Image (tube, rainbow, N blue to C red; front, top):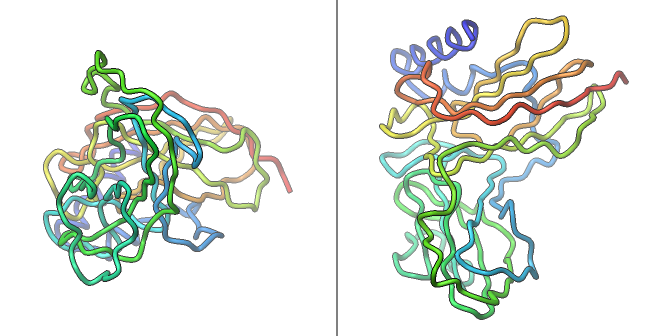
Length: 264
């Protein structure tokens, strides 16, 4: 924990005193590597095309190759989600997205929403846009779903609570091959730390290996996933969500998960 707090404090000082993006981006753990997929895209992390659902339904968002940030001011390599309901991608990506029931904005850095759609067929898309709501060519594939029932007696506000989730695709990995880890925040706002926006935080991953000191991987750029190459061993991974104004303050913690990295 001491190491975690020290790294976070150092990062905060770099951002506040040095400015900017450069310091936050440079403070990267050596395990973190570039994505082998080399894509920038949004996606729905808990629903597949062709699914039938009942509403209210908690719909979760994912993001590759970029970070999240609220709409306070410009921040390179970040954006915020927009949910398009029965709408195609905009023809002109130089204009801001409109505000109406078919273009739902998540300008606080949210990673999910509660669908309250009436029964029927729908096409959903995610589009990332900047602080001026101008799309930045990062979007999802269309998701076609059917709502079979709307439960009028279920209060959407009762679904979920603030918390975070660590998503691991496998229980075993091979050393030398990048391992994807995904993060999700419910009812918490994700942001690049450089914006210093009240009410936001970022993800931090701790890795405890038998016989080795704990490793702390900080993601101050608003990232919601990462590719890592840990050395061989058995690990306990724990995801935390820390306050951007006070990185020593943990706002939420996910249950620890085990993963084994096998020798080559």
